[in-house]
Length: 463
Image (cartoon, rainbow, N blue to C red; front, side, top):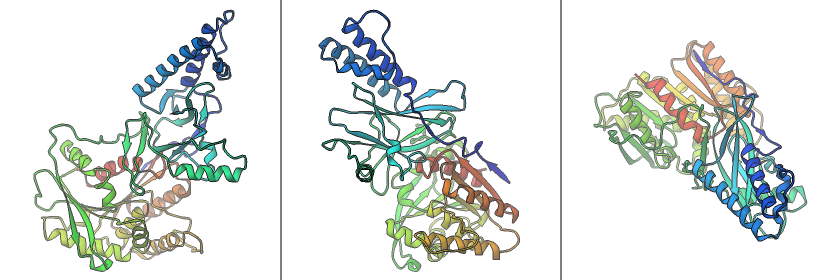
C-alpha cells in the first residue's frame, strides 16, 4: 500500500490577491517616479501605490516618453523570464505568488484567465485581470502552493463599448469571450489541444513533480510509431490504432501498455518522446503500446459510457491482433491499461472485469461520483452514475482479493471527485488490492496527467 498526498486540499486552495503582487507594485512605483521627474514634481518621493499611476494621464510628452521606457523594460523582462511571473512569499515558504499578465491596448475592455484548477466556470468574473492605470499592463495574481502545475488560456475583450451593467449580460459576454481564449504569448511552454484544436500554455512551479521534457536528449535511440486500421467488429466499425515499438524493434514478449485516447497521446502530445527517454534512462523496460483513437467527442462518450463492448475490443480483438504481429507478453502482470477522465473509469472497469488480461490499471481523474458504491438517481450525468454503479457491483461481487495492481491519480483541485478517489482507495486496499493513490496539486488537466502517467508507468511496469 502506498499513498502519496499533499498536505490537504485546503492548503492547496488558490487565493486571489486583492493587492498587486510585488512585480506589479515595482513597475507602478517606477512609472510614478518617472512621471514625477518629468513633471518636475520635486519634494517628497512619489507615492509608490498603484493608484498614483493614474497621473500618467498627464499630457506632458516627457512624462509619456519616460513612462513608455519603463513599460517597455517591464515587458522585455517579462518576455525574458517567461510568464506567469513567480515570486516567493514572505513568511510562507510553501507558497508562491503567481502573476498572469496580458499586454492590452486602447481597445481592451477586459481580459479573462481560463486556468484549469483555478478558474471557476460558474464565476468567470472572478478570473478577470485588473488593469494597471495609465499603462497597457493587465495583471492577476494568485497565491498558490509551491508544487502547483496547470494549463491555461487567456482572452481579451475588445468589443465596442464598456462591459454591460447587467450581471446576466456580463456572464454571457464572458462565456462568449472564453470561446476565443488562446495561449499566453509570453509563455514559451505550450501543450497541444484536442477538441477544439487549440493549444494551451503550461506553468509549473519548481517543486512540482518532475515532468519529462518534450524532447528526449540528443542521441537517444528512438522507437517506432505507426497507425493501423482494425476491423473492430465488436464496436461495429473500424478503428484507428496507434502503435509504439521500442528502439531496436520488438524483443521476445514485450510488456504491453494499452492506452485510451491514442489520438491525444500520440497525435497531439508525442508520448513516444517521453517513452524513448524513459527507456533510455532505464526507468522503463522496452515495451509496446497500443492506443486506439477516441474518434470524436460523441463516440468517446458513447463507448466509454457503456464500456462493455470497448473492454471486449481491447481484450479480445486489440491484444490478439497485436500479438499476431509482434512478440508480446500474455502475462497480465506485465500488461497495463491506462486512461484519463472517462478513459480512467473504463480502465478500472477493464481491470476488474478482465483481470486475466489486464493486471495493472492506471486511472487518472476518473469521474467517480457519490453513487459509485450505491444509489443511482436520475440526472444529467446519468451515464456516469450508471457506470459507477456497475463498477461498484463488480467490486462487491468479486473474489475476496482483487488480482490487479491499481494506481489512482486525482487532483487536489478536483473537488467533485477527490473524496470518492479516497473512498475507492480504501475499498480496494481493504480487498487486498495493491493500490496507490497519488494526489497531485492541480486540476482535471492534461498538463498534470503527463507527469503522473510517466511516473505511474515506471511504478507499475518499471524494473
